[in-house]
Length: 75
Image 1: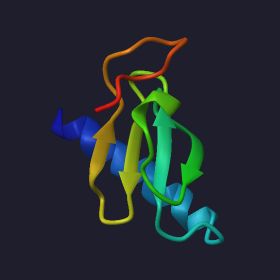
Image 2: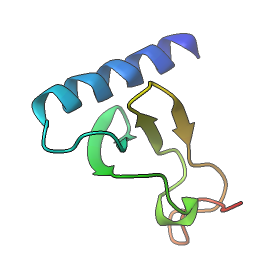
Image 3: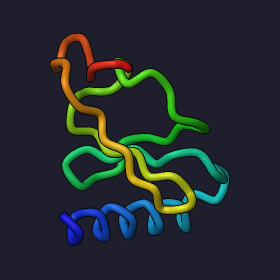
């Protein structure tokens, strides 16, 4: 799992370097590709299960549970 986390951080870091107009927030990654950015984490049900969100400090969050139609399980 450590290799995956480091790969996700690298993906997010590279995206941030190319998209300076989006400071802070979280970079959203699905299947090792960036598909979006949000200024903050929001309700997990807005994302499909398996999406990773990486914040500026390198913390990695994963959307889990739920399904493709209804989104990930919220807390």
